[in-house]
Amino acid sequence: MAGNAIAKQPAKAYDLLAAQPVSSKGLSASAKANIVVSAVADMDGSNHVLSRFGDPIWDFRPYFEQSNVADGQKYIPWPEDCSQELVDDCKAALYAWFKRGLPGSKPPVAMGICQAAIASAIPMLRWLTTLKIKRFDQVKQIHVSNYVHYTKSRLTRNPHSVYDSLRILDFLWVFRNETLSPLAACPWGDSSLWRVSGLAKQVGNQFGRTETGKTPIVPPDVQAKVFNYCEEILAAAPKILNERDSGRLGFRNPALVRIRDAALYVLSITSGMRNEEAIGVEAGSWRSEVRDGVEFHWVATTEHKTGKGKVEFLIPEITVKVLDLMSRYVKPLGAVQVKYG
Image (cartoon, rainbow, N blue to C red):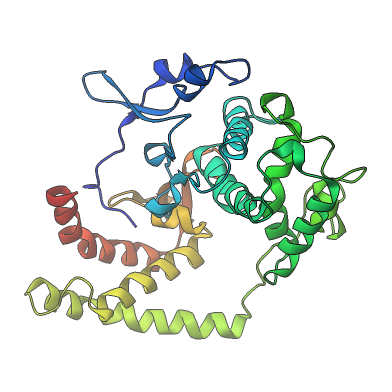
């Protein structure tokens, strides 16, 4: 949960980004390398380039609006020990997806392209490098079959993880006209990534989607024990915060961490928020009102996953008390953020 003191990210340099080509195909090596992938504008309106197509690292930090993503997941560290031809073609395919989206769908947000690069493109580049393959037109069907087997067997993978790991091959085929050494054939033959990954076998997923949750539901008796434990932690929180405010506890004391985690659990379980939405709640963003003699309580946050933006969640009175408690909890942390952030 965030305090109001946390600084906002700089604005994206929209004019500069809009002026960039939507495809790297046909450009000279120099022109392609200088395509601006990410940039920001300062308060004076001056643009500052963060990363270009030819850079070894693509920096998307200001493009993340989600508050539960670590900084390490906001970069794409393109491998420098792999064939440059392989790396450039992966860049070209992902850049085309980032600028135009897949046919019939809108372009991805920054998290999408970072996840595709980190979870799919980079591992495959390293695997191909072990086979001494330097271009994608050297990739044969046997290589794809072996990589699918390798992906499924190296860890206990569920179909969603397999899909995410193999997705770069889909992009390289869909955007093959963007690459200098395109794949010679569809990596899935007459099948599809949905079938190869196993997603098509899941209930309700015949059309590329599933109506079943990925995470098992926590049994009610376990939920009750966790909730009661969190209530005990939060009941003792004022005394612990008094100790912190008097200088007897450091900011990373385990007792303070337990308060934070208990508050996050209660907020999540009583509101139905996703983790990213709960962490994004800012101090003072909750309210109460009376309708027909009944008091209702609401808390606002930003919903990024579905693109709804600012939304409000109905919460019980206990959650309002937890949020009031967390307002006190974050005050010294906000001061640290402003001073050193």
